[in-house]
Length: 558
Image (cartoon, rainbow, N blue to C red):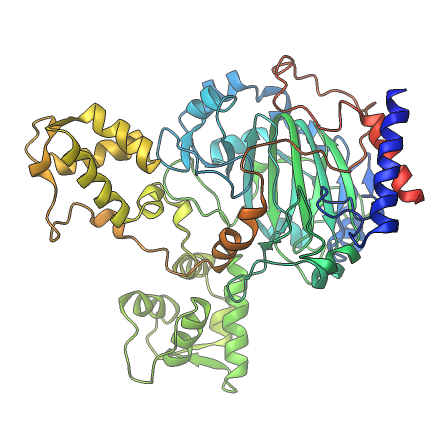
């Protein structure tokens, strides 16, 4: 009876939307409500050969799922909260909020946006925080790489490995990434909506900096505004439900939106955007699979030891080689000179080019010294082709330093004006302020961390008294706040547009909104009972999955 009433309301609502008003079907409804999914993403019970993976999927930029492939990783059985805390607790990871770009940046034991694994696991079930980080290298020994990536060009072009951990209930914007990835879910469940690049022209995008290959859509995935984004009605989509042990290939530039349920742990192996694949020299001659192997036995272009600066999101160093080779060809001389090299760097950093003879600064000069060690004033195409990986990586870091990768990211995230105003307000309000009270105010008013609040207090308390007064307010010429003068470099146009356009549309609270991906409730459980009594990450499709199937079918028939 309950189901019939639900269907009657649904059908009436849909008839009203599609028949008597001009409001588009799916308007202000969750992503995917505007039309049924085209199909479920291709799925295999076994990993296919590198050649077949290239021909059918990677070369076509077509997603595919490998059911159960993640079960070859020891991490799937070992990585409970207790084990991770005991074995890897002091390793550092990056944090984000569970709803992408919404809410304040989480604060961890290390600072804003950074935590130790141990502290994260103590707090993540009760706080809005989510590990989205490079995987620390010590953890590589318990992750297996899919055999389709273990020979030929794929093996030589592994870029980065990332870790995702949440208590469930996380959801992303509709976005696309600059590199290929195979994402393996080790615990929990995730639902994926995928949109082929063929529909790029119909997806409203935040304006990215020139040359950016990733990015996110300005469409609100919880309530798609089809009046503001009318072309989105033309967008087709596919989907997949992933359970623990499943791995999904996400092609570069392929829009996707992801929702997680229950405790979630995933590892993603990124590899290069390739235009061709060679099975030489190490793929099996008969087209069979290479043997499974550990991540710790592979060369990964950008790795992270577990402390210090990360390189998450850095460009494939080979693209720097391609940029320089292209410049040498365009020059018509078969080489690049210093002036052309500087112009290429300026273009890549989106800085204005300078007139011939004008200096570019010591950082640029150091880059030229890297590429022209013989000091003959030019770099030939042959020299570029044989350039060492280490040199290419140094150039990449110069071009693309991301403050969020720095252990002292907090200095970038807070402006010196805000910090100066905070200090003045706090010290004028009381006769004296203890270190404990100062740190508490710093955390409350600036959303800063305890460790950085303590550092600021120490700089202000130059005499070591253990308390501060109004007399300790620094003069305008003081260098106390110098650390907070750090600059991002490039202006982030996409985030500026997000704040202006998309944030006002989004729910202020972390409300779970159901969406339209069918789920097979007969899928096997991953055996993880850690959160059996925790409803926070429950799937919105779980409560009335059969009814949702029916309502989707009714809309389709209409």
